[in-house]
Each structure stands twice: as structure tokens, then as C-alpha cells.
Amino acid sequence: MNDQNDPGHGNSPAAWVGVVIMLIGFAGGTLAFWFEQPVLVWVGVGVVVLGPIVGLVLAKLGYGVKGPRYVPKSHS
Image (tube, one colour):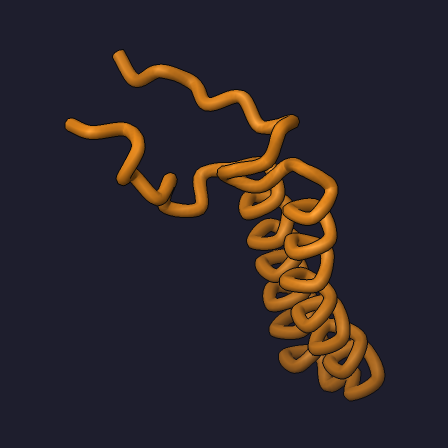
């Protein structure tokens, strides 16, 4: 396998943080929908929108797949 051509598949701290933020927003918004709390549903939507933004900021700070602060772990 040629590691230079491997895109990393988003396996970086920036990607993981962005996805976890979106999952929290989606889960919270879903619970708020079940309990008929429209304001909290929209807060959940805002958190979901915030996830990719945080991921991009972290990638720009060097925590993306090709960033200088990202240290890939070897697979066993």
C-alpha cells in the first residue's frame, strides 16, 4: 500500500471533533423534537452547522490529515 496516495479517510482529530459535535447536535435536536421543544430543536440545528466549521478551523490549525500537528497511528 502506498501511503503517499492514501487520503487518510478523514481519520484526524479535526474530522473526529467535527463529527462528534454534529452527532451531539443531531441527538440533542432529536430528543428536543420528541419532547416538543422547538427552541432546542433549532439549537441542535445550530450545533450541527457548527460541527463542520470547527472541523475546518482545526484542519487549518494543523490537526487535519495533512497538517503538521497530526501524527498518524500505525495499524496493527
